[in-house]
Structure formats: structure tokens, C-alpha cells
Length: 194
Image 1 (cartoon, rainbow, N blue to C red):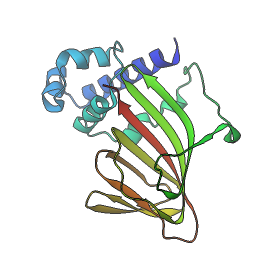
Image 2 (tube, helix red, strand yellow; image 1 turned 120 degrees about the vertical axis):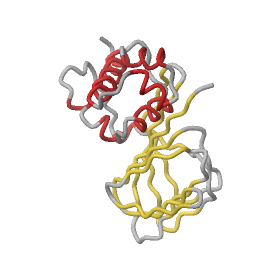
Image 3 (tube, one colour; image 1 turned 60 degrees about the horizontal axis):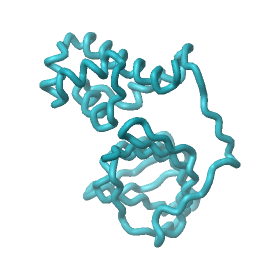
Image 4 (cartoon, rainbow, N blue to C red; image 1 turned 90 degrees about the horizontal axis):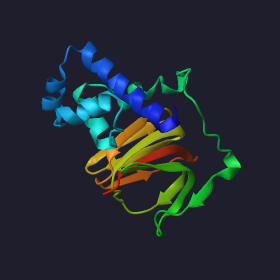
């Protein structure tokens, strides 16, 4: 079984187990999540890889955190492969022309059916500058080191090492680092291809 087939089966099986543990029928989950019974059945039986928005909607309906859902994936003994990328193999990418103090190191980008995923390591220098931006898709941030203020629409979050944030990238967002040291984040973009 290749990696994508394994992951498709793993996700579907785990969703089914969670649904059954909550004593929900497939129709109940469909009604609450807004995703058709036919599509949910295909996902649960490993015939279809769910789009990120669908997966997030299902997990929200089941009241399961995305981090918790994937927490034991790396411990699965039957996972057939791996991806090793050395630090010196990352490449710098410029995302915003006017940004000062934002260094993105592209770790991985991969397309699965109609979805695309990109993983970057972002270092934000102290007193960095840029305007709020929007992204087509869902963003996930994990603070590796340092701390920062993250503006998301009209909300402001103080993020510290170990904190994570998942949000709709269409909401204007801006990280700010007013500390004396750099902040380093793992940033994952999930984009649905139309």
C-alpha cells in the first residue's frame, strides 16, 4: 500500500471509529456536518481522500481537535514510508514583496487530488513589518520557539512556544514580533484546488 492509500484508509477508519464511539449513525453525522451520506461513506471506507475543509467540518462536528486526530499517525507501525529533508535542502521563498523580516523556508509542498498542502518554516525577526494578508485556504501555525502577537481579523492572540492556531486564511492576518529574539513557526497551508 502506498503512502496516500494508507493515509486515506487510516483517516477513514479513524473517523468511523470516533463516530461509532459517540453512538452516531452515518446519517446523523451527515445531517450535523452538512456532508452527504454517500461522501461520508466513501471517506470512512477509504475510497476517497477527504478535502481539508470536509475533514475539518467532520472533526468539528465530532468535537475532535485536528492535532489530537493526527497525534498517533506517526506512531503507526505499518506506515510504509518516510520523507527526510535535511535543513540545508530547504529553499527560501518570498511570499510578500513588501515584507521585512519574514524568512520562509519551504519544507514541502504536495498535491492530493483537488487539494494542495505546503509546509514552511517561518522565522519572524524582531520588529518585522508587513501589511495583513489573506490566503486562499486553511492555515495551521505551530510556534516552535519564541513568542509573538497574531492578529486575525478583529482578534489578537498572544502565542508562545508550543501554541498552535488553525484558521481560515481568507481572514486578514498578521504576525507581529516585538520581542528581542526571533520567533520561529511551522506553517502549513491547505488549499483546495478549484
